[in-house]
Image 1 (cartoon, rainbow, N blue to C red):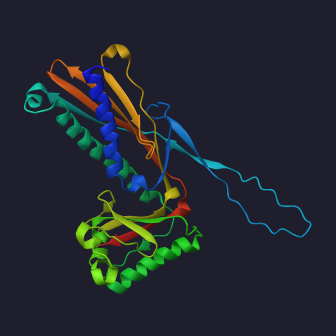
Image 2: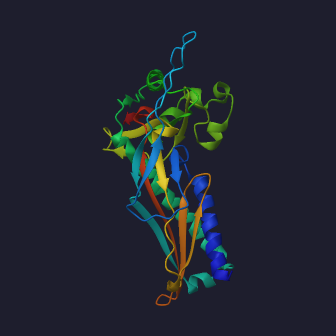
Image 3: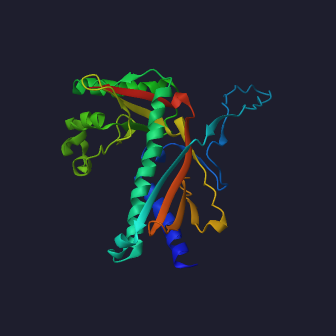
Length: 304
């Protein structure tokens, strides 16, 4: 393998590694992936198991055989995002190592590409059918009541306790929660993680909270609405597929990596642009998102 091919391989592997570190919402939803390449606009069918019923067994009687009808959703791979960087010979000459600048750009590209996945998932709030639970941040009592009402929604929907519940919060909502002594005082929480990390360090009535800049805010203060989402893993799905390699005669060094843990597939393309006297690096991603189960997601809106 020549130096350029090795470089492309290294960039691909490092980029996918950064993806795993930066993921928030995308790390906690269902994911569908395959090693088979696909092109923009292709549709993939994602299976969804049918419901089972607990039947009464009478003495001497037969069991009730069930054939649950499997359903599914179709996800269109309709989002193709890319980051292309020209790395000039002059810029590279100032670097001690060629790989250092390439690696830095790969890291930055991973961050902005992943943000597009997070944004697409967060935007699904607009298609949720569950009744909105209002996050009333007027006082400690109303905040607690809002969270308890949110918890009740999942209990009433018969979502099993074994399914981890998540609470995807925008910055204003996270701030409202962290302002409460019961979530920040060491003597109340029993740990100093919230104070040290700036993140909510403990579950909230069964929900694992995390903050993200991708949470959608509509309108402006004093009537801005932050569209937080409470959900379990099977509420949403993100589907990714590798993009095909370009033709061999084009002189482009291509590599595709699929992270087996996240299912994210990235392609890197490395070529030399003689007009700009620069190596050109492209990192791109093909994906689609969709609601998988409406019962498992509830809007949790804050107006401020």
